[in-house]
Length: 286
Image (cartoon, rainbow, N blue to C red):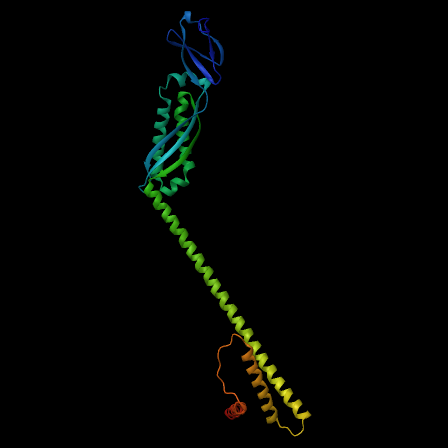
C-alpha cells in the first residue's frame, strides 16, 4: 500500500539506498520516506548500521614449526555518513575482511614461538585491527574491535604440552615431598635425642635417689640397732629388694616366664655377688 502511494518505511538502525533510473540518488534514513516510483525512483538496497561479527579461522605455522589454528573475531559496522561507499564499493564485505585477517595473522604468527604466540594474543589482535581499520575505512566501514579468541595447536602437540606440564608439576611435588620427609626425619631424630637425654637424666636421678636412700637406711639402722654392722644392714636390704622383685614379677599379668634361683641360699649368693663386684670395682680404680 505504501509503495502504491509512493512511500516506504525504513527500519531503525538501517538506511535505504535510493536510485533514480539506475543512478544513485539519496540515502534514506529511518522513518517514512518518499519514493515516487512513477518518477523512476526505486530501492537499490538496504544497509544495516548494527555491529556485526565475523569469526575467521586461520591455519598457520609458528616459528618452532608447530601448525596452529588461530580464531579471530572481528566486530565491524557500516557508517551512516559513508553509506554510499559501503554499498557500492564492496560486493563481499566479509570476504574482504577475512582476506586481511589471513594476511596479518600469517605474517605475525610465524615470527613467534608457540608459547610466545599464546602470550602475545593481544599484540596479534592489535596488528589485525590496525590493518583492517586502515583498509576498511576507505569502504565506509568501522572496525569496532578485533579479538584473538583461540589459538589451537594440533591435538598431539596439546597432549605433549600437557605431559610436559604434568611432568614438571610431578617433579616439584616430589621435591616438596622429599623436603617434608627430610624435615620430619630431622624433627623425629631431634625428638628421640631429647627423649634419650631426658631419660638418662631420669635414670641418673633415680639411681642417685636409691643410693641416698640406702645410705640413709644403713645409717639409721646402725644407730637404732646396736651391734649391727653395715654388712648386716646391706644383707637385709638386699633380701627386702629381692622379695619386692619377686612380688612385682608375680603381680604382673604380662610378664614372661622368668627362671631364677629361689631359696635362702640364693639370697646369700646374690649378696655375695654384689659385694664381690663392688670389691673388684674398687680394686680396678686403685
